[in-house]
Structures are given as C-alpha cells and as structure tokens.
Image (cartoon, rainbow, N blue to C red; front, side, top):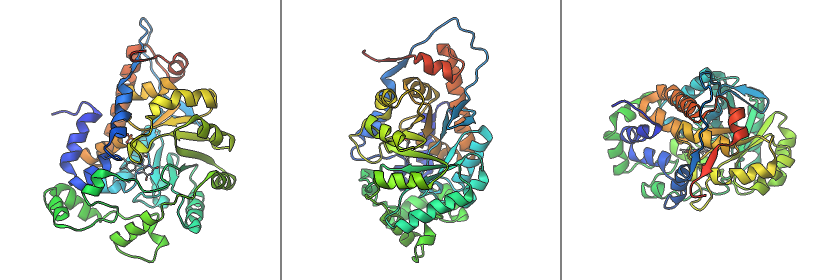
Length: 380
Ligand SMILES: Cc1cc2nc3c(=O)[nH]c(=O)nc-3n(C[C@H](O)[C@H](O)[C@H](O)COP(=O)(O)O)c2cc1C
C-alpha cells in the first residue's frame, strides 16, 4: 500500500525495527500522556481559511538567524540515530543539504561531528550536551568550532536521565544488554539485524574518545554517566561568551526562560519538551508558543518542536508564533521504515502537505501566514 502520511510510516518502522529499538524511538516519559498531548494539542488548533486568493505561486522559504532556508523546518538532533537506520545520519544530512534545510547532529549521535559536517557543510548544526566533566564539554565546543559549525545548539532539558517506561520494561539502556529476549528480537528482525551488522554496531563517535573504556556497552555506559544537572544560567553565559557564532538554546518552555535566553544573547531558542521523552506533565510547546512569542517580541527567533507529524502541523506552529520547526520522530519513522531514502521522502512529503494546506487556506508564503495568524483554538 502506498504511504500517504507520516503516520503511515510509523507501523512500517515498528515492523522493521526490533522492539527495543522501536520503543526507544517511539516512547515517552511515564505513561506517555505528555507524548499524546503533544499530538492532541495540534488537533485542538484549526486553520482559518480565506478564499478567493490567487495561490498558484507559492514559496515557503524563510530567513532564520540571518540565513535563508528553502523550507521552515529542519531535522532535530537524535541520539543513537544510526540504531534506527544504518547510515541514517548521513542520509538525513545529505537530504537536508539537497532541500536546503538545517540538520542537527546530537552529541549522542553516531557520526563524528567532523565527518557529519562534511556531508552538509552549510546545513549541519551541532547539538551539545554539556558533560559532567567540564573538559569534555570544552573539547566538544572546540571541535565544533574547528570543524566550522555555524550553529551550536545547547540542549538544556536533560538535567537527569528520564524514566521511560518502555525502555525500563525492555531492559533497554544505551548500554545494550544481551538477554534471550534481545537475541530473539534480532533473529525476528533479520533485515535490520543484517544491515546493522554489515554497517557495524553504531558507536558514539563524538564521545568515545573521552573514555579509556572500549566496547559498545562500556562506552554507552560512559555516555549516560555524562548527563549532568549542573549546567545553569552562569554556565550558559560563559558558553555564550566563548562561542562566537550562532548559539541556540533547546528545551525551554516558559516565557521567563525564553526572555532570559534572549537577554543573555542567545540567537534563538527551541521551545520543546523533548518530544515528551523527559517528563509527562510538561505543556505541549504548541500550547505555550503564543505567550512566549508575546514575551520575547515579534522579531526574536523561536523554533518549535514536539509533535510535528504533518505539513498542517507546521503551518499551525508558524501561525501560532514559531518562526521555524524541527521534526524528530517524523524523520526517524521515515528512515526506520524506508532506509536512507526515507529522509528525502519525509522532507518531500512535508513540503507537499504544507504547500497544499497553505493554498487551501489562502496563503502563499510564510510572512503573510504569520502576519494573519489564521488559527482558531477549538471551543474558543
Ligand atoms: C529517539 C530520540 C532521540 C533523541 N535524542 C536527542 C538528543 O540526543 N539531543 C536532543 O537535543 N534531543 C533529542 N531528542 C529530542 C528531539 O531532538 C526533538 O526535540 C523531539 O524528537 C521532537 O519531538 P517529535 O519527536 O515529536 O518531533 C531525541 C528524540 C528522539 C525521539
């Protein structure tokens, strides 16, 4: 059957991936009500159409942080990305370059930042987790600088590791544990297992050099051990002073924090609840973006993620106050289901959905959509 929506990709990803991998990708914190809310919140917002507008010519390019992008979305940073699809990071970076959109490599990614930037020199951003050991964070920043990254994204919403029920039930941690169930999952998903074996078990290529430990499991344990709850506003200020190019803070959800980040000189913030993966009771970003926009003013760059699964969702986020969005699982479902070609597939699908939906409501570009803010909150 032909794939018509991003939602169609999810069951295909589920079929292709061993359960512990799919659950790592798909799961959220606690009973996953926050994850559900991220999606439901988009259903509570409707698009208000205006008719009799010439919509034949449409252009959804936009400028973010002084740079023109062909579309108002980019690919979010994903830890352990190549576990979902061998060669996944490379495929996403190449597809992003071709589409002229940004793609973000995670500190917990499985491609070294030096290599990743070569795949998409003008489009790759680097996402930093500030490690428990200060020298590691210092060196990661130094390497990002030396590699020529234009944009550093510092993620601040992981002061502690989350309790993700599915991962706990599956006995899954980034340090993979070999149990009979684990082996059964590999055997019953031969496509994924053979490809992963052929490509080599994904490695934490950014972090592995900072430990003397060797082997997938000990290195993964080391990466988890670097999660730190110490990073604070003073540390962010130091990072701002040190990093001379674009600095983005990812993982804020309040007007107060966003204003603080703006005043500290950060170039943009990502309003995000980490895709519902850290805490169940956080608001959906789409529900708070309006008040954050009102607080930071009309010109401060706001990026939104968590729950984007369609072109209509992208339009809603922009109309509600975001300038740009990131897609996390949508992209990952694509490459998990279809392999490396899934990256282009997802970008093309979102572009097409967004363009048709905009035409349907009478808009041909982002500036006019944002100016009119054509959304209706259901029941209001
Ligand atoms: C499997 C997975 C791994 C992730 N790893 C990271 C990470 O390493 N760094 C980070 O800043 N965010 C990470 N995120 C969060 C995403 O960057 C993004 O905020 C989130 O996926 C957006 O929600 P969505 O999946 O509903 O689009 C991860 C998300 C997923 C699903």
